[in-house]
Image 1: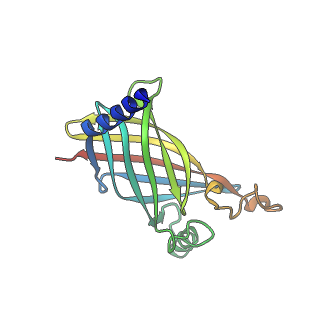
Image 2 (image 1 turned 120 degrees about the horizontal axis):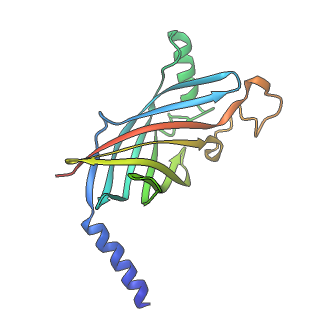
Image 3 (image 1 turned 30 degrees about the vertical axis):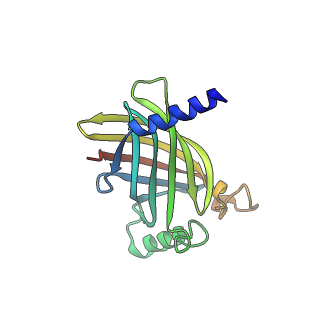
Length: 194
């Protein structure tokens, strides 16, 4: 019992000495890639807000909110087809942004990787009100009052109930099948809260 109290006390103390960094949404970016049998599409999505708790260059908490309504398509130049795909990604077949306008990543802590300046952030990823535990590898750097996290993660959309065009759920799709995984490449920049 005494060890449990000591452990909880240490956690509470670590939270007290953490410094909060606020995400700079204008400098941060998220780039998405979706793949199908006949090719791929890509575009951007914006960070809405967020904060990161850092203690001695270690991330021990935080929350990033993603604006799902901001999804754009970058690889299709013709406006008609560009907006058609954008609308499809935003409708109920995929992210259903009218009902679920935000996604989030709640950071629960981090641990070092083998390479210098590399770490893994562990936490809960929520999309369409479904939450999974996830580990996101990232390279983190610090300069003056800023922290920067850069990384790439592949996400299985079917874990969030997004099964449209999935060969894992539907037969006979042939070259119309869409990969279950989509990729996010991100750069998150945050400034120390004065």
